[in-house]
Length: 370
Image 1 (spheres, rainbow, N blue to C red):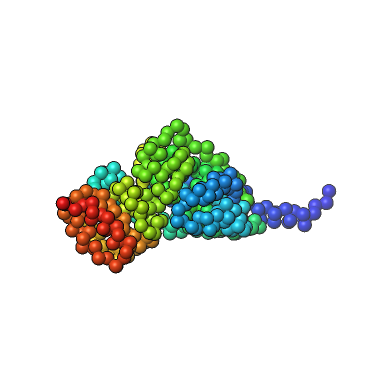
Image 2 (tube, rainbow, N blue to C red):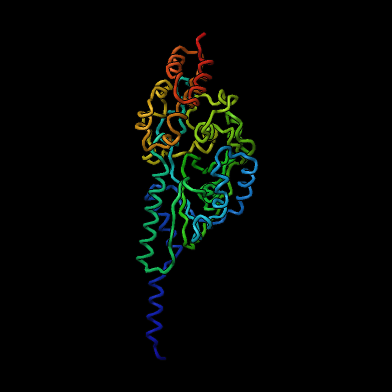
């Protein structure tokens, strides 16, 4: 039998230019762990199962003033519209729980301000996207080393584009959607999610079916009853929305329910039984500026320049000094009659912002010693 050297050469070239996708996925998960991600999973770029629920949420107006949700709804529900080459999505999870003061202790002390635990350290957008970019570079290098002819393009995200993160995490098997609508795992919910939209056609992981059971603690714990039903959130009542996303006045009826929460709210997470198993988060998210248990009067005294300087690199900075003062004024107003609170509020009663003055006036009426 005559040997066809050309056929042998072509076969060898085919092996050299190929790559075992199962092996590649294993490497991707190993590299992800090296970069600080606790879980990596692969899913198809298809959110058709979750899209109807999202579109109904928009129709009901539960997104409030978050107009970008409706504006980019098509990009969110059609991943290929956002990144045309996308075949699969690599989902990643990174914990952020900091070594910080206990949430209950801070919430119980009306002289302190409560900052959502995710915002105590560095801005997660930068950290998660930066690590995912490194992961993308490693994948590209592996494909080049294998002389693979598999087309490869990618784009990384972390709450930075119209991406249905929680559903991709569920499909990828790295989390499930809790009844509070946040992503949840057997290690709790104190984590960030990130994604890589990629042109690679990778083997898929098994979706997570969820483990909330009959528990409804998160629904019962919400201070403003924003979780209107299991897996349904009305953002217009959510304290995180009111203190972060809402640009105008906080509805008067909801102000007393906010308590001393000045940036976000974690009540639906702190009550979750799964968070008993939370692990300490990445060092990037360690507490800065002692924001885990700050005095309201100290924070209210920050000038705009001090606000910008102290919160450089923090997710809090994006709300701006005006909303910062608005939120703290509400918290001070909820602290009860106090000469100290009255004095610090009165000192800013002539603030140039109508928004700030209105909330200070409301707070003064509640803290006056009489």
